[in-house]
Length: 597
Ligand code: X8Z
Ligand code: ZN
Image 1 (cartoon, rainbow, N blue to C red):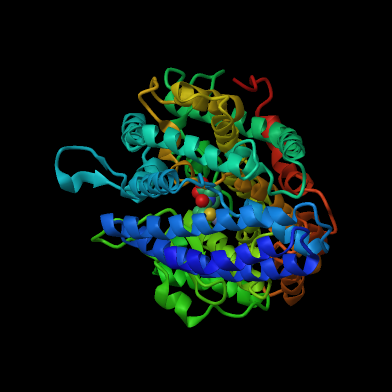
Image 2 (cartoon, protein in one colour):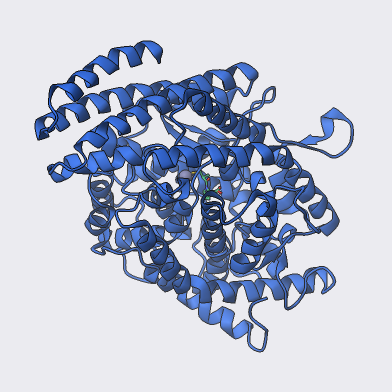
């Protein structure tokens, strides 16, 4: 960094002093140089971060911190220098780049190098701690469960004591993060204010081509649109869990204990589908069983994902994707198992990093991750600052829209099942989908409702855990399995809090993916109930999709949405259409039952 800064500074210093009134040509020149620098830093930090999350050691953490520190410093400096062009009338594309430049840092840092380094090191160490997190059930070192093992137990065990124990064990990784987290918040806010934002949360909310307050209001609109469906699902699931575990463990009128929903964070509930007592229907299938019986390995599963995209006309992934990705958890070292997709050089060096298990949810996650990679490749010809999703919700929704098209019809076409289940199977199929995608909605919303208040100071460190559970109750209607206190730090047991990844993107994605899906279905010529549509093999759908993907972030997101869907608003209409038959069915089942908690 030192050398680069020295090289950079005279250039900018020159243009700063040469003229007091800046010109459009200078702004253009400044931006061209800035994008070259940013691209170089991005490559360096990507490499260092890839190493750090694939080999979590003292040294890789230090190297990643160094790279991030340098890149943060350079970006902050560029934003600072870019302020010079603030009042200048610029062509819209160029103005957009200046606006995006201000938003590039998810973790803005103080200008003071000592404070900046402190913040970067905290950030890296929190993510590393999450990656190393384990719960050792006894004192024997070989009885330690990592997050992959914990997830399996939470998905399959039906013993409430074991579930509570494992839940508690996993959440015990987080209290040591608490102090560092609150310091991180302080330092990052400091940086955000220096960049001209109220706090880091305000910076995050500014990335949606509308004023931050309008964005918050839009989220509330979407939540109100989907909330009745969530309540119907919650009511139904709670009643079945009361039958399974008894009213002592599941209060019939209260929030559902968070350890009984098949997932350490109660964020997706698909794993408890077998507890819901639906009769077997003709043609029922269990994708996990099928994947196992076909003896598919992790790579084989990813091949299916790639196959979906190529069937729509996208080029296959490059050979380096297969050589450099991490598909399975290495036996001998700590890695960050939380799935992610990477674009190391903003060109062709695409990778995924995932500890794949042979099961249905991982099949879906693979499509999710590949959605990121195919998006990244589609917009690689854009200038650096436009090489991104139309907004971050779009990035998360691409692969999910494809995963929605993993219908029985599709599975039959690729030879994974023999017969397509009849229409009577629709309710079970829809319920299974809803357990993952509808149950997720309040969770997707609440994480940043918590974090935005943490960043704004409305939630003080002394209330971190209490306010976390208030929001969990308010939105999700779930409760902790045992009393919690401020010695706990339950938010830190979720990857995106420890790793400082904004989360509202996933709420948006869970709405957008149905909009994308419906548009792709229409483009493929499909007619019929929405939940049975697949566009596997549709070149027309692929071409339309690509039209949006290759725009990257070059235009405000409503423009991108319009290209694919003809709509300019995020809207849950498609989601509600998809689940309409289920909503009707749930409400019949729920007759007479109390809704809410
Ligand atoms: O983090 C992810 C992806 C990587 S971007 C696996 N997701 C969220 C989560 O796991 O909490 C996908 C769904 C929500
Ligand atoms: Zn993702």
